[in-house]
Structure formats: structure tokens, C-alpha cells
Length: 87
Image (cartoon, rainbow, N blue to C red; front, side, top):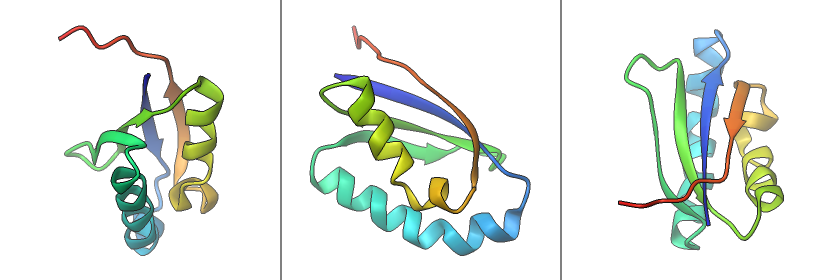
């Protein structure tokens, strides 16, 4: 099942830039394991969209919470929902 997360970043752009390499390494690992479908920042760098592949909402939330961006406080807030992809 797909679980998209709409994420809002903190205002500390230096923190975002310093943690971004670890964040992208983490996402790359998840991608190679088939645990995310897609991800990327919004063009204004205010946040991002990550679509997790998980067996449950709890599993998707755990993937999000293990993200280095989340652990460093870059994720100011997020909305995570189960999504039924039709097209």
C-alpha cells in the first residue's frame, strides 16, 4: 500500500542543507529496498513529498520517523495518509 507524506521543513535552511546528504542516503536505501515509490522537495524548498510503500500506516510512520531529517528536527510537521492509487 502507498502512504504519501506531505512534509513541511523547519525554517533553518542551514540545518536542511547540512542534513540533506544523510537524508538522501536514507531515501536511496529505502528506494533500493522497494520501500518508497517516489520522493522530492517542493521547488520552494519549504518541504517535500515522500510516498512510502508499506504494509501499514504504522510501518510508514516508522520509516518517516527514522529519517535523518526527522531526527534532526528538519521535519516541522507532516501529514501521512493511506492512498489508493487508481491511475
